[in-house]
Length: 125
Image (cartoon, rainbow, N blue to C red):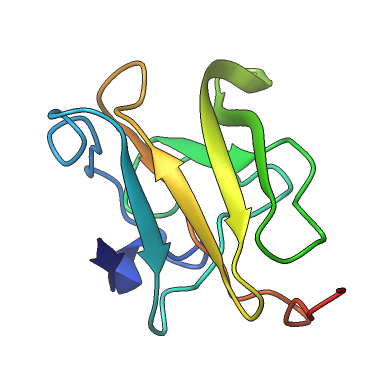
């Protein structure tokens, strides 16, 4: 599934979004596209950003080789912890972009945030 949603951007300062219904049927592979960002951030995002309250960011290693998939953890920043809630995801390096296998967050008012990477990934094979 392609998700083109500018409200997921780490620069959006509204809240209210929830990813539970989007992923209610189970885990699915997602590619983020558009001006809202193409990648889940790899560092904590302030609360009440990305059109949600508890902001989702990827705390694992990104796959560096093309066609490689890594399982890691998405953390949700809330209260006094950058990783108050979390869930497992998979990330695949597709050469010029990543795809993510995402499932419903552990609660509502949680969303996967997106950002535009500082430097695009490159083919390392």
